[in-house]
Length: 421
Image 1 (spheres, rainbow, N blue to C red):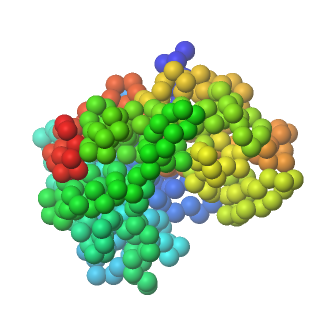
Image 2: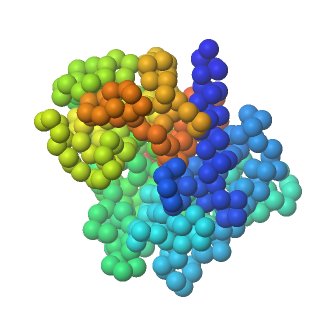
C-alpha cells in the first residue's frame, strides 16, 4: 500500500511538469492560476523531474533530452544580454518570466536563490545525461556554460553576504541572506564556482547570523517555515557531514531537519492558538498560499488570516496547513510523515487531484468549500510539485543525492564551506 501511495503522489506531481511546460521554450508555470507566469525555480525542479520520469518509465529518454535541451538553449540565448529587462543579467535570472515570450514580468527581481535552484537543476541534468550522443553532450556543455556565467561575486554587492536580488530600476535589494534559510544551496554553488567563486568568508559571515534554539526540549538550528529545512536537502545529502557551525553543536544539517520536522508536528499537537484540524497526523506549517486572495491580514472572528505567507513555527500561523511539506519530510522522519500522508489522503481526499496533493487548507477559516467547512486550495504550484517528486525519490533510493555527489563543483563548494567530506 505504501509503495502504491507514493507512486501515485510522485506520478501525479511528475505530470504537472509534463502538462504545464511550454514546449517551445521549456518554461514551467509557477501555478495553475490564471495567466500564471513561469517561475525559474519551477524550471530548475523540472530538469531532474524529467530524468526521474525516465528512471520510472514514465518518459522516454529521448523526450527528456529534448525537454532539457529546450530549457538550456533558451537560457543560453540570454546570457549577458545587453537588455537587463529581458531574462537575466550577470548570469542570474528574473524570478518570474512570461510563459510565452520568456521575458521578465511584474517588475520582479533578479533572484539569487531561484537562480541557484535553476542552476542546480541544470547541473543535475549534466550529471545524469552521460551517454555519448549529440543531445546529451550538448546538455553537459550548456549546463556547464550557464553555471560558469553566474557572477556570484557581483551578487555580494561588496557586502559580507549574498543579496536577495537586484532590479534594473533600483539596483540591489536592501536584504541579504542572513539567518539559517534555504540559501545553503546558493552558498555551496557560489563557493564551488570555477569562474566567480564566493570567498569562504561570505559563508562564515552567513553562519555567524544563525540562531540555535530549543523548542519542546529539542535543540536545533532555528528556521520557522518547514520548507527551509528541506530545499537545500533536495539536492545535497548532508547526512554525516559537518561544517564548523554544526561541529560546535554536535549535529549536522540532516539531523537538524529531522528535529525541525518533529518540532513542526509537536507544535500542531499542542496547537497553542487553537486552530481547527491540527494534530498528531495533521501538520505541515510552511510558506504557502492562504485562504484570502490578498496579502492580508484580514481579521475575522478574532483570527487573522493571510494570503501567501512564509508561515512557520512558532509563527506566523493562521491555521493554514501545507500537506505537501509532509510528503517532502519523508527522508528525515518517515515514521511520522507516512502516517500523516495517509491521514491527509483519508480525511481530506478531495485535496488529492490530477497532480497529487493540492497546496494547502485552512479548517479555521469561516467558509465552506464544496459543502465542506473551511477553506481548501484548488491550486498546484511548481515549487511544491518538484520537491514532492524529488524527495520521494531521495527517500526511496537517494537517487538525486548520489547524482549530485558526482559533480566536482558541489564537493568543491562543500569543502570551501568547511565541510568534512
